[in-house]
Image 1 (cartoon, rainbow, N blue to C red):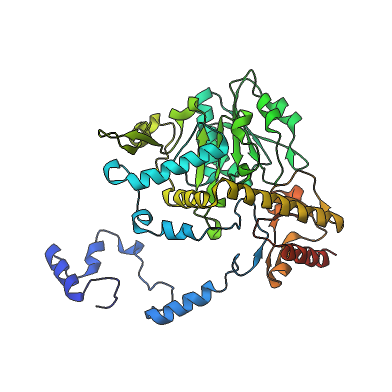
Image 2 (cartoon, helix red, strand yellow):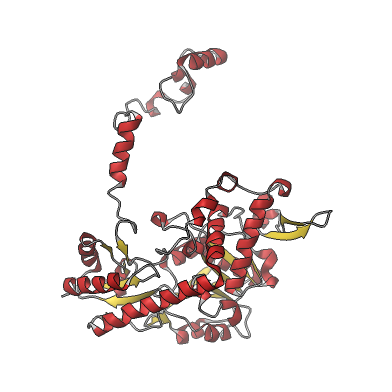
Length: 447
């Protein structure tokens, strides 16, 4: 046996070729013209034995700079948060780790209940009537919410604030292009949505207004004023929200949001170089049957015992795609479970305390940088705030890496109007010493 992971001997190979009547593997490709066949060795290294291969891969991996090796002030949608140890212990159990779609409730009660608990906690945090079983990520949830709004209202105009995460807006534009929908981006006023421009853009063809809370810059939008703009129209009010912030802030549901979406990465899911994460999607009861993805419901069996099943799913989502409200019919059950375990381990008081620490530590750093003479953009800040530097952010971040820090997000990468502006994220894991040292370092590099 030439390789322990491929249980195929040379004898096995010869027997299979004899069975189908060929003399060589090349005969399997006889129908492919020789001129298009790949007729040279691949330009890759020679294979190695397991031990030296693992050593080489380990050396490559050791070059990565992560929140384990450096102190991170990088956010912009993916955050370095505390993860209770119990999370990995639960999601590593084989019955969860290998589970997929719980189509057969009689053998999937554990998985179904785990999803049901996730839905329940998301609904409670957002203040909405119902939540689905999760989606691929926050960006997907955001775009799907817009598609639901356009289908429900029969309108084609989507108003979205430029204070929404740039990546979510890019996904929205991609979805909208295929559906021939119009996406209108509303300008900023400092670090929040310009409400005058938003109000002026609302008309009879508006399907929805979409904002983020807290927004991409960490600022808090005036949801009450924005909701009022939908009065007298069919437009839906859609809010993308950090669920951890909702442990402290008034939930969007209490402001009359029709749909609340976001990413559950902040609960129990590592940054993981950008994914995979776990989107959530919550809505009012009136929109329940139009929600994308899966929905787990609670019921009783014929003996009166509590049970869980997939429910309220239109089969068009699977087999009649031209009539589907959404063509997403999968979810992130494992990461949703991680988020559920984290929220359960923290409890209501723990979630509140984590959110409170994010608020306090962010504003401690923001106030201190203001006192030190940095140009800090105005706004009520949760988790993040924006600082304007005298030097390119990329140069400052390169120097910070040598000091053991991962700097904030370079906003100039997504908007030229924000050249030399850094979006700094401060989570509950950051200490006063780390914050003070970071400020001292960037003070030197900004001179």
